[in-house]
Structures are given as C-alpha cells and as structure tokens.
Image 1 (cartoon, one colour):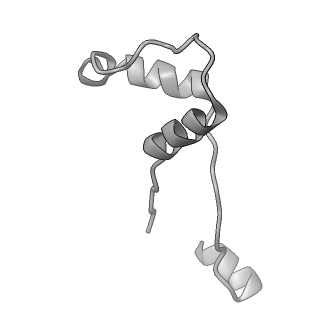
Image 2: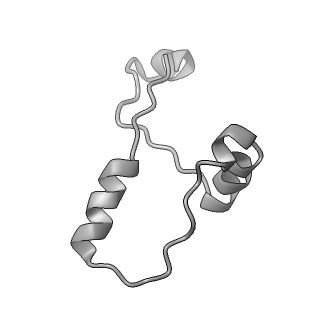
Length: 65
C-alpha cells in the first residue's frame, strides 16, 4: 500500500480479492479441526432467496493493516 500511496498520493479503497473455491476447499480439508466441521455439498435445487441468505451467512470481512 505504501507504494500506491507514493505513486498516486492516495490509498486504494474497496479492493477485493477472490480465491478459487477448489484451492480454498483443499486448504480447509487439510486442517483436521476444520475438515470435521465442513458440510456436505448441497445438490438439491434451492430458491434464489435461500441462496442469497446462505451467502450472507457465509461471507466474512477480512481487514488487513
């Protein structure tokens, strides 16, 4: 971030990152304490509203300073 501040005079805002789900799942499965808590994949059809609610419950905010 300091490089961005020096180059532009401002700090970046609203920067988002994405992680491929296959990488994340492999990582989570490699941690025994976490692996035991993972839920099975959902293969049934669900309503859009339910998908939105599940996404809200699963989302997290990671702050990096």
